[in-house]
Structure formats: structure tokens, C-alpha cells
Length: 101
Image (cartoon, rainbow, N blue to C red; front, side):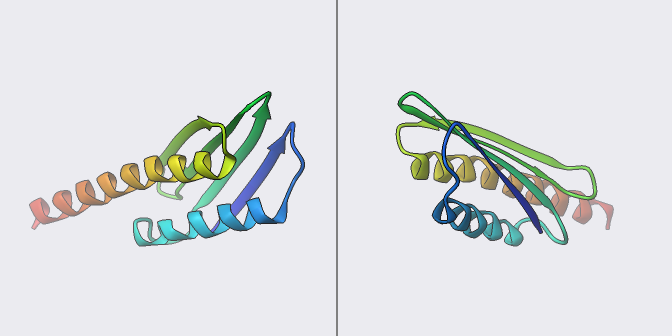
């Protein structure tokens, strides 16, 4: 698991990096093996934006963007979106495997 965190128009903080690390590590339940995460945290006036892209070696890509007043809330909401996408794909792969048998 490789995580790249980019801060735009805001100062980099270790607390934000640790939160992103913790949230992305929860995806291990849905994604087997190595995957890459690219997270862009930006701030414009009063809105904070979290843009996240997860790429797997077998070609699946999960994307999510969320804007909110609070950066921690934006990170949590975008992770909810990506978890739903990963869970849906995991269910599809299980269904596909069971049909092949």
C-alpha cells in the first residue's frame, strides 16, 4: 500500500496524514494485495476539498471527491464513497467466480 498525500493552499500537518493513512488502511478488507492511493487535500476560502483516487494492479480505479467546511468530515465522506465502490466490486467479483463454477 502506497499513499501519496498532497496539500494545496494549506499547510501540511502530520495529523491529516495519519488520518488519511488510517482511513485508507481500512480498504484492505475490500482490496487484496498492493494498491496505490493518491489523496489531494485543498482549501479554498471556507471550503475544504478531499480528492482521492485508489488504483489496484489489476486495473480497478476508485475515485471520490468531497467538499465540506471541515477537512476531517470531507475525508470521512470521501472514504465512505470509496468503500461503497470497493464493496460493490468485491460483491461483483464473488458473484462472477460463483457463476464460473
